[in-house]
Image 1 (cartoon, one colour):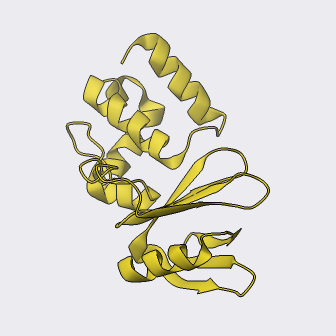
Image 2 (tube, one colour):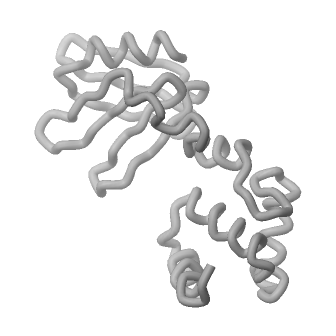
Length: 157
């Protein structure tokens, strides 16, 4: 990691602009490059992430870390496209259902990934509203593809 990239990542982190996975990847990069020990204010956080099993002592984000922040595992990631996807009526948000996760595009354009095991309930109303109740919160969509979305999630929960 270059000094310029490190400074950019640290600034985003300090400003609260880093996603959870970006934060894990930043700490992993600090460990991998040996920079964590040079920056005491980040060394403790890196140690805690290693102890929690989120990153390795070699500076790699683990499957446990990716699961914890709701990010897909790299080896399973998008090799097969989504089973089904739908676009939220009116505002263009997307919902994509994969065999191991659901991706919800937010109004701000970021993507929230919800592992299937975190979905507690899926409901579809007569109006086409799909509600996902998850440990990360509830998501509601009005979708033309509501029936297909509900079926794909139920089959993979």
